[in-house]
Image (cartoon, rainbow, N blue to C red; front, top):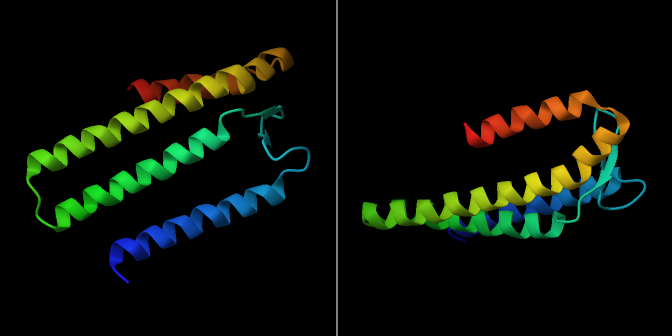
Length: 127
């Protein structure tokens, strides 16, 4: 088995293992999460996020293979730009979901810590 196939298999097993582990942690619904701030919320875009993550991981593995194969730097840079765009798009989906659910819940509960964490996350995304 090639290193790329081993990496893909290992990555998929890791993602599936995390998914199974996360499933066992959820007591109310598969899509709800409780954070240290104390609010419970659901995420409507979890499946889309996981699908996009899988695609991004696949693209990164392709870039790695391109580098290993000595492909033209311009081709690698174009693929890296596509990966960056994919990650940026993914960040927007997660941020939108976070605002629509987590932050709405946090505001209703007066959870200032969640709002502070959102500010820090936005600084990292934009920064």
